[in-house]
Picture 1 (spheres, helix red, strand yellow):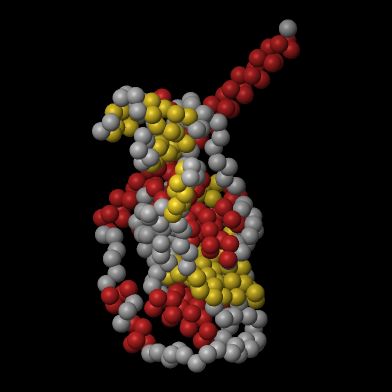
Picture 2: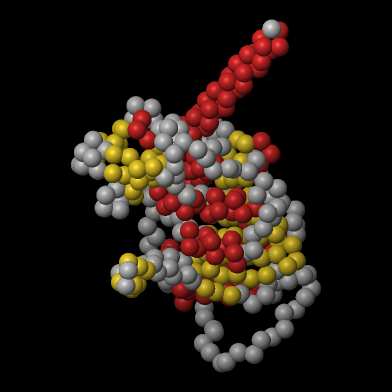
Length: 361
């Protein structure tokens, strides 16, 4: 699939929109019962609910954080969505990396401005957005995805949020093990992030690409994947002892003296496994451990992998539909920003002409 989305020059940093809402902006509406709805503003557009109609024109021109009345008098709070709001509502082809896990990846992988990062398993582009924000305009993100449909969805989602696809981000459709040696020089990558079904298959390729002291982080869903990934990292002899964790987020209800945990929480979504790249020829000192059941066979693990149990995946028809939606949203945002820039140029030219006329007088 050809990438027809607009690109930013030189990896220009994305500045979130400020000022009044404009046509093409995304807005997050909070209804009377706290329900969140995210939509793109259009001139003469309407948002219909069973409780009435909210006109887009009533939102356009209002400042961020305004309260808008629907036709029935119901009030809606209008805010520009934050990055974590956007990734939870954007079109999806594959399951996303939740903001709580993306934050941990950026923090524990120490992704810094100017970092050279490799990402495998781009999915719907959620983690790519967090990584692009962390590396800034001077960094470089190389993403690899086996399925063209997922790559197209990711490009569309990133283009929608940033206004254009940044030049310091590339998406390669193919297998990481085969494509990475041709895409990067050995020991030239600062961080490798693997979000895939079998990250243990890519450990050696990641080790070849990482600089000594660089870091690999793997995001896996199940305990068996966690175990197999950690053992694969140990078996290479090229990494420090892997560290594993998961993040659980529980919100609280705080209203006066009624202070208690909420009944619902964002529980398990995945495990993170991190390890540092050793210098070539270095042997990691043996750590003293308690005796335990560390021995297992490939058959033991394979019996419980998602592939053996039966992985649920989206149909090709749904993926094509989501890819079209994501690309359409990205083009709409780019067109709105281009129109805004053209209006600003025309206004500046008129002002210059008026100034010249004044000088003649």
